[in-house]
Image 1 (cartoon, one colour):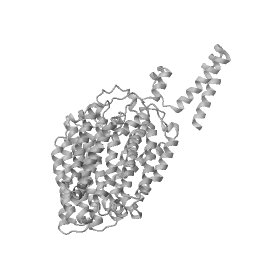
Image 2 (spheres, one colour):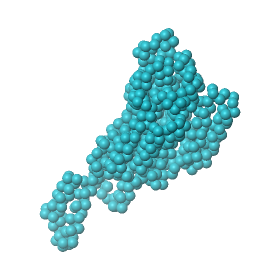
Image 3 (cartoon, one colour):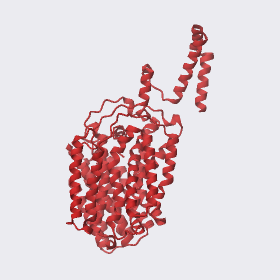
Image 4 (cartoon, rainbow, N blue to C red):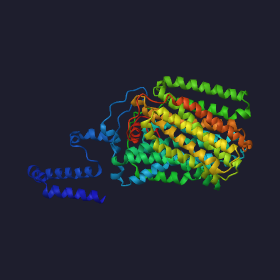
Length: 581
């Protein structure tokens, strides 16, 4: 406040002693006119100190219109509507909503960005840490003989997280990103505590669903706050930091999970408590509450529910096929429920004023192929990550700490490959890059299986080379699919399309865990290495299918050379908010 006070004082002195305007005003209007000019000069000093300077033309805008522009955003198009033309300044940092920047209000943009990025890591980390802890969770809750039941700890989180991303983004647009972010943090933190003290497996699964709902609010709201609270010259840097923090969650997840599980599996949830509480306090104190367009309509919630029922019923049938019997009434009932829910989703989507997914987007060959490819890629990653974790713990009898460290190179290779793949996408067709990534993934998997089958039981020789190649292959595929999926869609559908693809990524993880259970069977027999070899051959077959799908991924127009944050910023202003995370 020292600089602001000095600015006001200097302006007051200029008006009273040196300003010609003040002298002439005093001569014409007397003391009252002098006081009016003094107040004008002081108000201008305050405005210049707190708000970014506007071009000269902006001074012609009436004050009431400037106030409206400062506290509102234009109504954005929903599915099927044409996006209205937007002023140029909407995509320039804090001018996205016209709010004062965090730098001028509080002077702590670094703390704010760190808080938002850490919350992003916390929400995404729970997708990865459980992979290492799953065996210990089963043992601790006396379900070690039923992998099909324990797998719901993973699947429930991914299922609800993916299904709620789009509605949560719309919720943030309607009720405010700060409010949504704090609500998401509170829900996630309380649910984490409940998970940590759960006395039974199914209680834990239930609170994992609640935890996923909180994470689905945190992700879009946090990116939206990055875009609207940082100074204009730091927005792109902030988006990069936020995105990299989310990617790093996959790399550190197995290590963090292994270290915490060594204490107790309950610590993978307890660790969220101090982070969540600190994030709520910092957000409450430092982030301004920017108003939003209250006319944003919520999407078809019944449609979202039908997505959960459809994917959940399919997963239930796959997870319990071996134990219940593939021809049993329960399994057949699961398939019937899945089909009925899928039909109900399509009917609801066509009738809804604001559908959760606009089915017209699937008329695009590139978009349809991208969704199939991302589901397969996520399923492969789920098979590899969870399968290798169980293999090391049950076949090689490694500790959770050692297992977590052994898993880290794969996700790290995914992150490393994603840094170089944009250059490849500019030189080669998108479909060719994705297909080559799936080929690399298959090669790494075959290398690992053949080495292990020949009796090599050394991690550095038998697992590490293939695991790194698998990571590089998936690093070529996943970012490229997400980046090009909406290339042939109309601009007003790009953000919604990105959110759909990312939801498909979560559903692919559910299918991957379900396939793993089908191949491995009950947990008490998964110590047999041959079961894992069969599982990894299934992953090779999925790679082959994905190569065929990749042929349809090349869009009619190749993505232009541009900053990767530009489409993210643009997409986050859509009514789906920032679900592109």
